[in-house]
Length: 151
Image 1 (tube, one colour):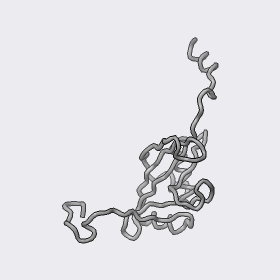
Image 2: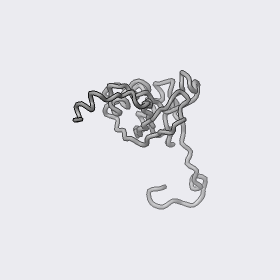
Image 3: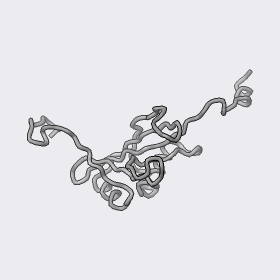
């Protein structure tokens, strides 16, 4: 059997398919402290809880296009800002039972936002909240002094 015949006879329903989602880790500074933007979930599962902004990947879009769409739809970026915002794939989460609805694989993207952009996005979008990231280090509370650029 040649490849064309194989593909013509191939049954794509022979294997169960997980859903694919994108989550964005939007990092920036809030009042000079590291923070991440979280969104309050409006729907179940976990309605009312805070999560990274994300969405299902549509069948006709790339991962990067889905990430840009999440920037527009969930973080309020306009189309140009969404395309210009540098983002990198951070990690892929694939635990079988991580979502109660079904098997979902999530590709997390990381975007570092300038402080002014971070503040504006958090201010203009009531569904988003800047959650400070606590770094446990004795130097913050008068412990040993850090060397070089760590200070």
